[in-house]
Length: 140
Image 1 (tube, helix red, strand yellow):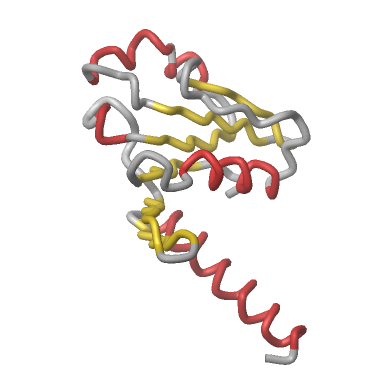
Image 2 (tube, one colour):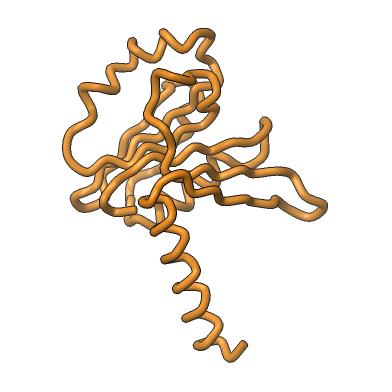
């Protein structure tokens, strides 16, 4: 993900979208406090050469309101977009490379990862490789 791309975070209230984004940003090396963008709508972070923008569009009433965020001005260099509630801005935000669907489960959350582009597919392929390496190291 260090080259950038777009991730849609989908799920009901409390499903874990912001928690997932926090964990991903930490894994990418963000050392700053990762705040929820619920009220600010967007929070940006730097991790090496990558700039990550975490958007929470829950409070957006109409897709046209996205223009007020000035996203075009932010789109320079390697950018990773983590977008919660993307359905509220259909047609005015970039299409996803990966969709992360989070749902409540009996003792936690279930996650479904859906690649929509070759970029998203390569991210999932890398997850498969990392998982296989952990299994070999762990003796499973």
